Image: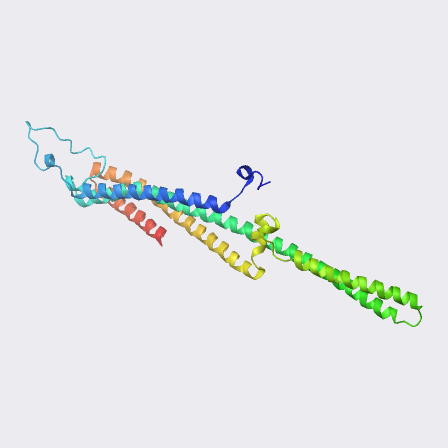
Amino acid sequence: MQQRTPKLYKIDPGATLQAGDRQAAWGLAWAAVALLAVLIAVAAASMVRPMSWRHTPTPSGPRVLRDIEIIPQPAVSTRDRRAAQLHLIVFALLIVLPLCQIFVSGIEQRAQAEAARRAVQLSTSISAHGQRTAFVTEGLRAAQTASLQATAREFASLDTGISPREARHERTVAAVEDMIAQQVRKIVDYMGRPPTTTDGVDPAAVTALSKPPERLSNAQAQQIHQLDLAQRASRRGLFLTSATAVAVVAEALAATALTTMHRTWWIWFATTSGVTLLLMTLALI
């Protein structure tokens, strides 16, 4: 059915993963562009001072709004410049951390999908090899039984208590059973071999039986590697989520500290900022 209607029933997990990787690459490229824009904005806010802000405004001059800052700008801050720089870092982290979470979440989802695919392939290969081994074992047992029966009839034909006609009959039957045993062995050897696509077998079965049983341990190791990768990505995502939550609190504390200019608020703001950076460091380890 897959060959007759490939558009409806053709399943190609490898092509699906490649398409997802291409989309993830595009997403990563756009995330890099966004990160570059954030770095440029941070650098500009730290160093660039507009010409109209370099001089003290006069009553007759143009009105300049210095206190309204969508992005914290340490370069033109009239307050503590180091505090404004830390505020700018926290503001940039609020933009960068969600991008990092999306990236880590993509890695986790891909690793989980790959681990699930490896698990299905591994279980299918084990089941297929088990069925093949059972068929070969049962076929060889039938061939060996026929061969033993032929040998027994040969010995029975030598019994002096039977007539020559019965002896000839036993030898004839023994020869037939021996031929049957040889044909069964040939059938087992042919049907028990690993199939190929030219045999008209389903591609999934060909893939499942193409690897020898001793190589299944490699597939299991790859599955374990993907699971470990997913777990590490999940741990990084947890740290990044926690860092984002603390960064939101730090941003609120920064707004309060800049409004009140009270030292206690600055201490809390610096503490939460340090916790945010610590969680980010743990996420990168």
